[in-house]
Image 1 (cartoon, rainbow, N blue to C red):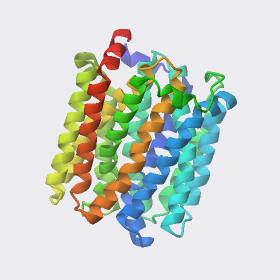
Image 2: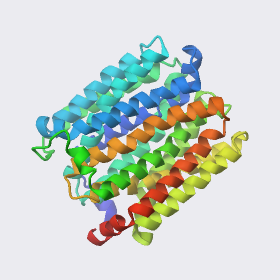
Image 3: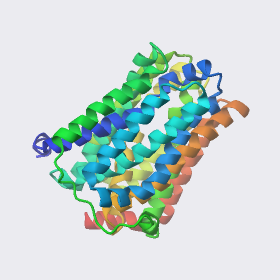
Length: 390
């Protein structure tokens, strides 16, 4: 039944999934070229980490207006607008002459990312067959493919020049934009009378707030891996690209196939405990063996397994834990969780420069362990309520 459901999804679902995949490529795209950017623009690790910080900070804040924008403009037009903004700022990023300029263009890219991501998830849920869980699985599959392909694209294009990955994303986003214009019918319905403050009000629901805080802390570990590993392995762009390709493939596999099975067998609280506990241990091991490149590579790829599970169960939880409309819940949740992605890269860069190269991974391990404590300490009742109603 599952396979049939996936094969017979409407064309509009695959168009949205493709566009989401390209959008997520932008997160890992810069990984293989972080060293090259630092060398060419005379920047430090913490300087180039701001490429993640500005991108995700603007994404987080802009999440507060996504529901309002999609309600006023319609889901299809909001998606088109978000992709258009990404195209413009990705191409401008490729023209940068300083790291400060590049960081600024990445911030504009984050605005388009926010408009697109939250609306795309709500749109896939609206048009996919098989219920919200199937739609979220498709969305997470797009995320996994995007995260795995992004570093390879960054490595290949960055091998020519560090600027080319940014232009490459602009071209791919243009293809995604054209696909949405041509093939996505305006069937994406979003709730009306949504006010800009509604995502903040939605966080008044304890379960959604706890989920967001736990995801914020989890992102502290996620971006410790994504933003600082390139500076501790003695690889060039291709080596880093293939390393994170393996990481992303395992992430995607576990997001699509492993996470639903773990959820079904163990329930949400135990699934979260297993995945976050495993990720904490892996981060601690990276810190312990940070001077052994082979061990770091194996551990980084292994991190893809718990990350894939966590991406899926966090998204499912955020979409189902509160009674507010899904676009509003998504906006509020993403506002909180992306703050973790904005803070972590810069903190990790400073720790790596001023303390030790192992310190960012100890920081990530502490964040993930704290996230698990928050989730199980304050959110266990809400997690069990989801299982009773779904």
